[in-house]
Image (cartoon, rainbow, N blue to C red; front, side, top):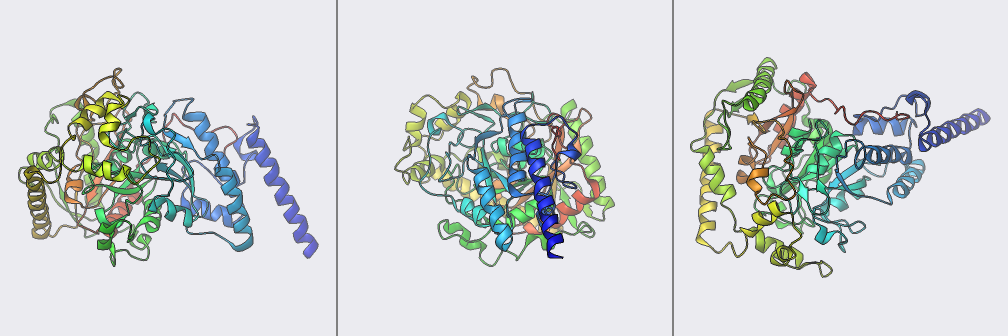
Length: 538
């Protein structure tokens, strides 16, 4: 019996060795003969990978190598998505360490060898953190962000840092150029977590992390047929992340499935003394968010539909608006079919005006926040926001936007007006939800499909010219509420549309229940045609 087991082990090792060599040489053979039987990389989930490790169908090193080949084939070549800023040069070495640990004692943590794409706004002590800017292209922080530490402790591999809108706005940056949408590389991927959204959509890794100040998790999720969760502001630590507007900033998962987003949130949520606001999360984090994944989660749920566009420039008579509306209407019909009760429409008084005055007019937090953050990094190449702008290296559209924040402080009377209007709006929304007994609000993440990238994008100084039209992402940030964008399908010309569910503070369990039920009943996500299975890829 012992000899039989030994022979089987030798045969298995030989098979895996030959499969690895075949992939490494890009052998021109069918995928099934060059890869571990029964494992499929494209659209694989955390659960799929766990099962493959357990059954020894794949090793961590093989998995990481497969993703690296996809990045090589499609990021700077092929459709040239430009989603990756820096590949982790130690990824394969880390994978080998995890393989050894697995063989000796089992999984290192709940995300054992799960490759993650991390937005380059988040500090990593072993890789550059650029914030999308050439100014910081060689900046390596002397610490890890809390979220980085948590991911590593859970056994995840930071496979790469992703490109992002420079200093957290848009999809352009002096460090890399333009991020492109894998469903149509001539179009916007949304921002500012552009690289994470495009990269996970293209299957460059299993899951990703984005940052959401005004929609930067949910926008890339919507435009790339992904699931994106903006958590309640105090739920996830921002320590080690360059701020944009601290009262609105948060980090959240971008994934191909609702369950993967829940598994990722399990790891990153919770109190962190380095970010005092997270003390409000104490007692609010369940043992696992996966406990709320219920295929019947929409049965009996009450949802309020916001039909009024948040963006004052949205033209409801335009063909682009009508394309998205057709997808949203089908999504709402599906929600009803699945047993939800719908209040349609639900009207928030002076919605557009409230969003503008609490989001666009809040110029008071940014400079102080960035200066305070940079002061903690003695090796940073620039120490203040003014110093950054004086280099003249920031892309023009972002530079002109940042300039409006110069000299503004939270001591100004205008900031008090923002805070008072924000609290008034929060009370109005909560009262509407209470009066109608609503579990969540629902609307299109964007009322328009992804816009065509302008030929002058990198030179155009107007942030407004480059902003994606039909933006409905800003209500959740000004309230500090959680919101989840889930794939709603595609327009008639094949462009992704996201449907967004917004809940009350710490109502992530409700959003997971609703989002999962909708996802499982519709299966709207489809991978982009521009980044298909590679030859030899399982």
